Image (cartoon, rainbow, N blue to C red):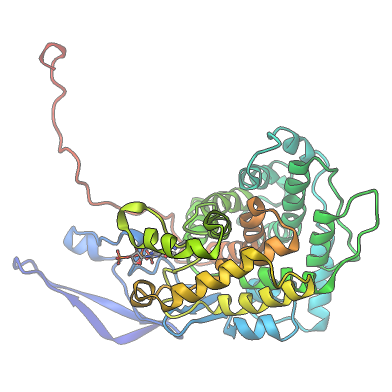
Length: 434
Ligand code: ACO
């Protein structure tokens, strides 16, 4: 962050003194106006619901240029990270440490993560307390928060070693917890991690194997899952990441902060979109019903949205969507599902929406979740678990952002202000006068 020579001056039409504010430049992206002294100098707040024009922190982890459709992890384009042979743990190392690992660093990181994949044996009793039909996100909010009860030796957020250990524990144990949530929901025994498998292969193994028969890992499907994880690993200051930062700003422990992030991710406008997109396709049912559905979407009073379309930041295209679309074809080919009716319906819907004036004029394009639901369904992941997979992928981003925040000397407890529009001070009337 460097000081710009340009300054911003805010003046008022009522003759109050104007105020000059510094402007900072990042390495790329928009400059920011430092308004921290605004309230002290003028007695006024800024008003920005939804943070449309507000940078809440400075960060060097992930950069998005929504107009160009560009997503960079530590400067590296997401296309190169997803297509050049590196796996999810390599992206994790990059997000956490700022640089890609060399062969030795990568091996050490993989070994460390791998040694933390098991969860405390007592965790299974938490699972057994949930109803069998509980939503996996509800199970994950509870069980990830509960990790804090088991790992007291890594809760001191002011100790860099504790922060490191918690980060590794969260990244290593999330696949185990997500797979346990799934196994519990179908009444199968929990499967312990296998440390001779890669991160993604081990997750598939914990999800789909059972003690009665051998399980063969399909490399094409493992690569598809790995790509889902890479594409969802971080996305700068989105709602769930901001939730993690806000929770962490009070000094809360990392397990509690990540549980808060999972809760936020659950919403259909955020991580719940892939589940909602698939339910929408199932509800539309057939290609013939698309025009009627599109009419409903355009009707403001219907409350119906085209799920998996639109993005707060990407206003041209979502670069992750392009990569996920590619994976979608690979997986369906591998499994011989090219004629899957739901996939055909999705492709027809995509085509119609991309040509429709309503969507074109509002710059609404398919986002990553439009395709990731179809891929996950083909992998055998049940719809209700889609957002859980997203949470598993995003854990590294949340952890990297949380760690960055803790070591930022400018960090303060997050405490937004408000424009109060309720009743001004008044007296409670006597009982007989009400
Ligand atoms: N279907 C129909 N209309 C839409 C959609 C949609 N999916 N998304 C936006 N619009 C319309 C809005 O009604 C609005 O129309 P108007 O100008 O006539 O009032 C216009 O497009 C602008 O929309 P906003 O809501 O202002 O856009 P915003 O940036 O606030 O919302 C969001 C972005 C929440 C992602 C929205 O597009 C949406 O709800 N999409 C569907 C849910 C979804 O797929 N979410 C996943 C996001 S990606 C992720 O989390 C990984």
